[in-house]
Amino acid sequence: MIAAAGLDRLIGDPLWSPHPVVWMGRFISTLRRRVEAWSGDQPLRLRIGGVAITLTLTLGSADIGWLIERGALYTQGVPQAIAVLALVAGLASALAAKSLEQSVLNVISALPSTEGEDLSAAREKLSWIVGRDTTSLSRDEILRATAETASENAVDGLFAPLFWMLVGAGLWNSGLTAAPGPLALAWGFKAASTLDSMLGYRRGNLRWLGTAGARLDDLLTWLPCRLVMLTLPLVSRSWLKWPALVRFAESEGRHDASPNAGRSEAIYAHCAGVQLGGRNRYGDRWLDKPQLGAGYPNADPKAINRILQLTQRLELLWILMTALISSKL
Image (cartoon, rainbow, N blue to C red):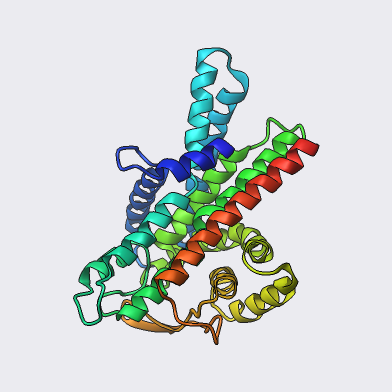
């Protein structure tokens, strides 16, 4: 897992490498077309189809990860070495620290240096990593959206899969080597997360088709999100402020419609000292998100870099703490 985290930080998600999430996305698209052809516009059939897609993808992804783990644990000689490399590469593919950081910095670098210049390049790059409409965002709104996705996706793309890797490692460390391990659980989570990002929208057929995947993603992210809330203050501010930071994040983040996104953004807002939240446009509808970190300055490139640095520190803390605990067992 340490090697996988290092590999992710070193190369991220290179375009030349076939990424498991890409294959998950293609599989979801194929299953969606078949389910919609079978169900028509009937909500009950769409819900049943959504459950079937969710079970097929998450269990199938976890099973493939489990088979790779078997090869790493039980085969001998050269095949085992190959299986171990596949295990490390698979674990790295479940982490998105480098790709998230690059995507965020690409938006910042595309912003013009002076007010009043063309923002189309920054809007386009931002549209690749957020779900909101970016076509008419101002410079300040682009910066806020970038800060919010850097904080929310730190949980979804890094700490949640890392958490499930740690659970799998814990199962192995307790002697349950036949149980699903780090890769199986991480890929199972990534499948649920991919389902939510592709189908988890409350419009058209997705109101019913995407419900199962969205609920599963919320469930699997619930505990990792709370652990980030509890540990991020340890790498950001004086430990004496820990109770207040956690309390503020919970009181503000719980007003978000998502059980996790608001809390993720809220703890980053208070730890990085930046104000987030506000009015966003998604397609043809507007959504008012709760204000987070009221009283702090609005998002700017320096605040966004602080968010990225906090993510780096917290990832290192989680890995070091886990390594220390493991060495004591």
